[in-house]
Length: 82
Image 1 (tube, helix red, strand yellow):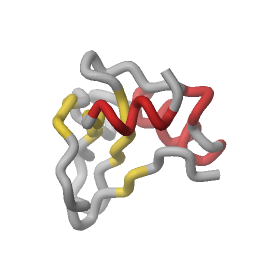
Image 2 (image 1 turned 30 degrees about the vertical axis):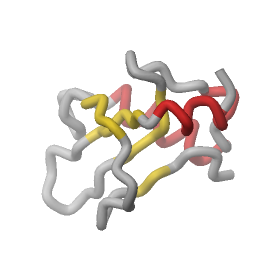
Image 3 (image 1 turned 30 degrees about the horizontal axis):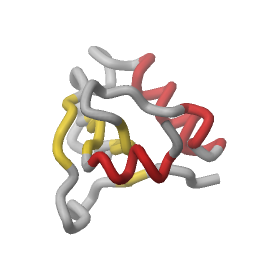
């Protein structure tokens, strides 16, 4: 699935920080939470792998949510950023 298809599905995987100072990390995904790593820019790929590696320490278990039509304030959406 390419990034256009992932964005069209209307789902995001959201990593909520366990600390109050951090911001959530949000990535486009398919309905089951699959993120197409090849479609991510370098920075987004690093952030995604970082969040996955630190689940339980710095981030809560990720949640798969339907994408809102507006951007959630304070969330960084990192699809394709380089």
